[in-house]
Image (cartoon, rainbow, N blue to C red; front, side, top):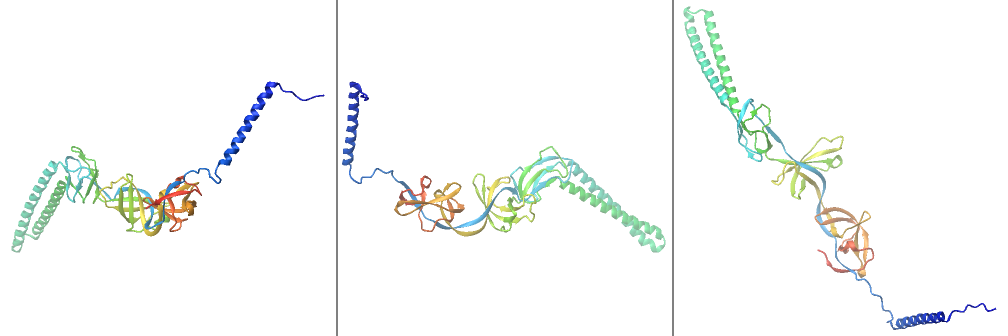
Amino acid sequence: MDTSVRLPQATRGRLGWILAAVALVVIIGIILARRAPQGEALPQTSALTVTTTTLHGIEIGRGITANGSIHPWQEIIVGPEVGGYRVAAVLVDVGDRVKRGQELVRLRDELLSADLASKRANLQQAEATFETAAAAHRRGTSLSGSGVVSQADLDKLRSEEIAARARVEVAKADLDAADLRLKHTRVTAPDDGVISVRNVAVGQIGQVGGEMLRMVWQGLIDWRAEFPDSLLRDIRIGQSVRLTTADGTQLDGKVRTVSPIIDTSTRSGLVYVDIDSEHARAGMFARGEILLDRIAAQMLPIASIVIQDGYSYVFVLKEGGIVERRHVETGTVKDKLIEIVSGVQPGEHVVAKGAGFLKDGDRVNVAKDAE
């Protein structure tokens, strides 16, 4: 029995054409492969152009940093020493520099002037009474030998003279007190300084002990910050401090003192730093670095450091333009440089610009060494 499948005539024709087309493609591919030059490489992606640098040895300061605020070195509260009198004039304003003894506020003094005149009259009256008593005592003493004046009368005259002298002293003391009260209507600066707060206006009633003005003593300010007790042992009076304010201004200072008390809750102590700068204002925030000593350090540009997986790496240029990724330990940052503690040897060329686009084993073109 014949079990073969016979295809229709049209189908057998189309299959023949397909087989012929496939054979033609294979023949063309063989011919082209034979014409290709032997050993010709496929085009390669062009290498990245980078710059390189080497370790720079410089001297840097080793320090410890903290955040703090600027405060007045000492504030003086200025107020009247007599109360119940209206303010007649305020002669200064916030920001004014004043000298010791300079008049700042003036109180109305009419009542005190009148009281002073009364006390002066009382003194004159007491002095006149004393002169009369003293003269009577002298006459009695001169007549005591004649028997005209008894000893009892003489003692009385002497007692009256002593009492009159005492009244003179009391009148003098009252006059001095009245004069002092009158002088206190002129509120003056206790020392040189800068007016920082004004709480007084013309017409208000001055009260003893009340705050009229506040002034920064001698115009001095300082920076204060808390440091852990583990670092306080490294801080010494006179050490240099570099401060950076919120707007980037650089200020210089020196350690004035270190607090002898450690806060039991934070285990830290205050450090006081004197600042001599017209650009600093009380209340400003500043980050401070206390310079402990100076050391020699090997530095690279910060741009050459690549952070991957939480670690710092650089790309070291090897022979043939191949770069090697290498783990490094970093230290102090100064301007645009960073200290390399370990991982790179002096003289080795490190990729400076373009490191962020590289991976271990890449081939690069070197433009020139970075300065």
